[in-house]
Image 1 (cartoon, rainbow, N blue to C red):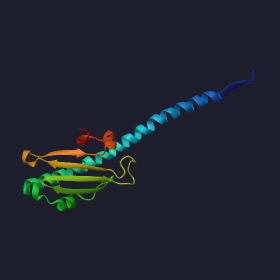
Image 2 (image 1 turned 90 degrees about the vertical axis):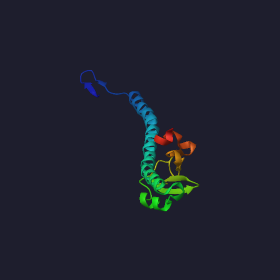
Image 3 (image 1 turned 180 degrees about the vertical axis):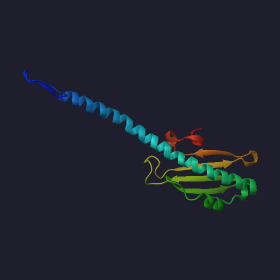
Image 4 (image 1 turned 60 degrees about the horizontal axis):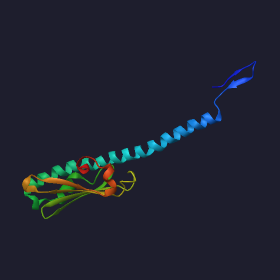
Length: 151
């Protein structure tokens, strides 16, 4: 606000210290907002793993009901669900003594740095009792986990 009164030669404007205070306040807000936003981005990208897992889970449970836990065709399931999504680079389905493991690996580029190259493993077991799924993820991803993995 720069107004000058002609007769008195007195000007009213923002001083340098006032401008510095405003810049400092904006810097403090940015220092808080940027890490929070990065955490939000990581959580939303993590949910893609859960979304893709929904399709894999349906395919696995169908196979278990049709062929039994020992007869699950992991290659067929991988073919049906595809390679991944925007942030998931690879989906691998393996069977081991009646248990089914679904490993999802995040891409190394175009994804939040915390998730890059990390893997999340979903394990299905106890098929005689209707089946139960668990989630195993690295400890450093616990704060971005949602849904089944947050339990």
